[in-house]
Image (cartoon, rainbow, N blue to C red):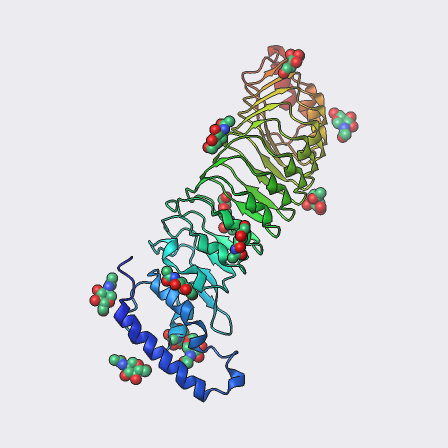
Length: 374
Ligand SMILES: *[C@@H]1O[C@H](CO)[C@@H](O)[C@H](O)[C@H]1NC(C)=O
Ligand SMILES: *[C@@H]1O[C@H](CO)[C@@H](O)[C@H](O)[C@H]1NC(C)=O
Ligand SMILES: *[C@@H]1O[C@H](CO)[C@@H](O)[C@H](O)[C@H]1NC(C)=O
Ligand SMILES: *[C@@H]1O[C@H](CO)[C@@H](O)[C@H](O)[C@H]1NC(C)=O
Ligand SMILES: *[C@@H]1O[C@H](CO)[C@@H](O)[C@H](O)[C@H]1NC(C)=O
Ligand SMILES: *[C@@H]1O[C@H](CO)[C@@H](O)[C@H](O)[C@H]1NC(C)=O
Ligand SMILES: *[C@@H]1O[C@H](CO)[C@@H](O)[C@H](O)[C@H]1NC(C)=O
Ligand SMILES: *[C@@H]1O[C@H](CO)[C@@H](O)[C@H](O)[C@H]1NC(C)=O
Ligand SMILES: *[C@@H]1O[C@H](CO)[C@@H](O)[C@H](O)[C@H]1NC(C)=O
Ligand SMILES: *[C@@H]1O[C@H](CO)[C@@H](O)[C@H](O)[C@H]1NC(C)=O
Ligand SMILES: *[C@@H]1O[C@H](CO)[C@@H](O)[C@H](O)[C@H]1NC(C)=O
């Protein structure tokens, strides 16, 4: 236990004081007013949970006549009209404690938790998954948190926003994550999550942004990912994902950024990628993708950056690449491409950087290229 914890004797004194106050108010307050008043007795368990966590330091030296008032006044705590805790927003509030020091089951009305950047340690207690009203859970960038995602994560069915990036969690993504049907934002990046991406991820139809980058996820990308029609941001980069990019990826018509670089993906780039007309960023570099660059890439009219370097793509560069008029960055370096650089590349008036090194392209076309670009 932290040495910030209220000493039990001092705490008992406070409890007695508050209980007396509560009993007195029972007699003084007309019964009809009881529910709407911020009466301290309604949330004694909550007060106890907050103050005993030690996150807000030492309370034993003060004489508190209004504990609920104290609790609802704590940095980052918001109560509803009945004095019950509904929000905990202690972003950047360095508590140096453990998530498990809080008695979460005593705070059943919590809807919003943001304890990011708070140097919390000691893993994620399963009790947090009993908070059935939770819509927002952000534990991100508590770099020493560690532990695993509780298997009961899927009980948080009201969850809209889940951010566990940079928490050093390990182990698998529990399949119960597929129960989080209201989820719009899922961030699990920069951790040590392993195993496969569960098929159930395809149930998250409301998902708008998903970031699972920089983990050690393996296996293949489930084709159910094609069900996530509302997705605008998808990053699976820097994992150990293998096999083909599922052609169903072409169903993600709202996608704006797709990052799958630094994996072990193989097979060809699915031509269905040509359906992603809102795509602005496409990173597929550092994989083992082979075959041709699909000519349908010409349909990606919004594309601003494309990096498909460090693969084993062969064949020639499709001349239709010259139709990607918004392109500012193009990297095809370190592939097995052959033939000429198509003169149509000269149409890319917004191009700022182009990297074609280490391909088998004919040298004389590079001279042509210089002419077309100037
Ligand atoms: C908490 O308060 C008590 C009483 O004033 C004091 O003896 C104790 O040292 C304090 N603990 C910390 C960690 O400040
Ligand atoms: C504690 O607060 C109560 C109520 O405000 C007051 O009557 C009492 O004198 C206080 N005791 C101390 C030691 O300050
Ligand atoms: C809560 O904070 C307000 C404003 O700072 C203050 O007036 C009030 O006395 C505080 N309540 C308690 C119980 O500390
Ligand atoms: C307790 O403090 C809260 C917040 O400051 C206030 O709204 C409430 O009226 C206070 N209750 C009593 C009984 O003083
Ligand atoms: C947490 O609170 C619940 C009820 O609110 C209680 O039953 C339980 O004993 C508490 N747990 C701890 C470890 O204090
Ligand atoms: C949480 O979900 C599990 C199954 O995933 C279920 O058995 C359990 O009853 C649920 N708990 C609560 C508190 O809803
Ligand atoms: C959630 O995590 C991502 C990293 O994956 C971070 O960039 C972002 O700021 C976080 N979002 C919020 C709303 O906290
Ligand atoms: C995938 O990761 C799991 C968990 O780390 C491991 O047990 C399994 O061997 C890995 N599979 C492959 C093909 O690397
Ligand atoms: C593509 O982007 C435009 C402009 O932001 C938007 O109106 C349109 O709905 C998007 N298309 C899809 C399929 O999301
Ligand atoms: C390109 O690579 C594929 C296998 O990945 C091979 O079947 C095909 O013949 C190659 N084409 C050329 C032109 O080298
Ligand atoms: C692609 O660009 C060429 C000129 O380089 C043009 O003739 C053609 O119509 C363009 N295609 C589309 C689909 O815009």
